[in-house]
Image (cartoon, rainbow, N blue to C red):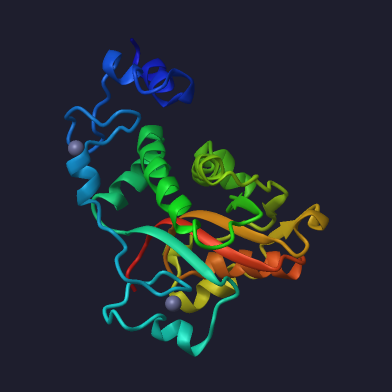
Length: 246
Ligand SMILES: [Zn+2]
Ligand SMILES: [Zn+2]
């Protein structure tokens, strides 16, 4: 079976776990036989760099187990109130995200999304779930260049697992320079007023979860959160696959 069709069948929830016996998947990291319905073996999944103890607001890893917040959030809280991140942005997660994002290795993105969605669902067992989930949008020019928004697939998996509807009426109205190429102090300026929201009636008083692949300085998360709050949302949470240690 051609690989594309095989992936489609394996990743479809319609076929159930028995499909794994017919078409065993390969681990995206070590090429050995993967787990049912996930293209990663258990030892590789266990070896991914867990976020560990982290700031409750921005998910920055912090060393002192008694601290609840990082120094930056203690000084000034960002507009979002909670960040859920699965992993530290380092090997092999960083390579999987780059392969997915820049080389369209969809199986890498789906594999990370499946693991992350289960972690996020369990993180929301004790607390109120978001009312809506939304993908951080790309500007249409970058969307066209890349061919897809890497956050869309993640958002679909998170929405399904959390049973939370997707809010799609947000766009990036201004193109921005690549955040990674800018010094930290210029990132916030670069992202001022770049997002705009339609159908804001739907989000009035609601808790919104914003999905991104990686959080670095948090500048994008701050900008999009402020846009949602200004449009009437009550609270914003951020869901990311990985967080860079500062
Ligand atoms: Zn493996
Ligand atoms: Zn923090």
